[in-house]
Amino acid sequence: MRAPRVTEIGAPPPARAAIAARTLRTDRWWLAPLLTTLGLSVFVVYATIRSFVRTAYWVDEYHYLTPFYSPCISESCVPGASHLGVWVGELPMWIPLAFLSLPFLLGFRLTCYYYRRAYYRSIWLAPPACAVAEPHARYTGETRLPLIIQNSHRYFFYFAVVISSINTYDAVRAYQGPNGSFGLGLGTLIITANVILLWAYTVSCHSCRHVTGGRLKHFSAHPVRYRLWTWVSRLNTRHMQFAWITLGTLILTDFYIMLVASGTISDLRLIN
Image (cartoon, rainbow, N blue to C red; front, side, top):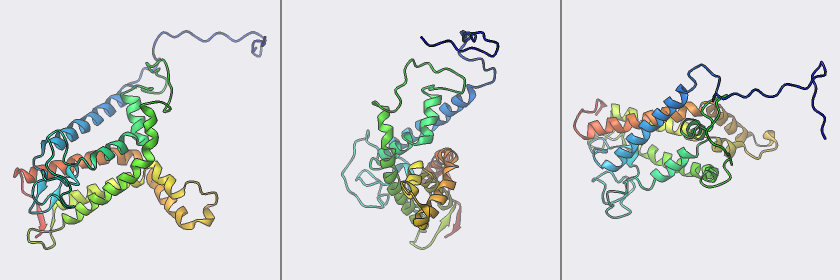
């Protein structure tokens, strides 16, 4: 039988204190999980509604297409919105027009390392804060369904790169004026800023960092990949900020295009 551990004076240590309270913290530890839940909920509700309403998502005069409807490749799309052509016929109302991209973008965001931490703590309360016990009796990690799907994040990253490239093409099209000549408006700047930030969020991903510098034993033998890894690593330290900023820019971009497309406001034109 193992001998009990003794203190400096030779007496056994006291038993662990029995604390009935969930936590002894007296600060507002619940505020951060609450704000995270509210922020994610606002985006999910807004994005869901806008993805299914099928109105005011395309400004034909300035070639503005909201990212919630890109790419629009069905016959259900309004004329001009199908930048990549029409691939499928009419879609029922319960299928979003951006059905080709939204599932992969959702998978990329849901399996993102930062978003995992955000909704694990705020929604699943696992745990909600430091020194606060979680309500779950067992923890199996990401080894069983459904959380084992989180390991597919690296594959969703490649799809996100493709979709960000499509968004970039949409932004380039937004520089076309009414008569096919070069044009620049406030909507063009908003779309461009959103695409730049989406790229920043995508390439600052942990999976991108692994792609650029993972499995290298000697950086000196791979100077190009080392330089790329260095740049991505710098962005990676801001991955959380990009994750939240892009939620805001996506809403802002869609909302502005909706206002212009519906005739509520006119686009502020700077050139043409």
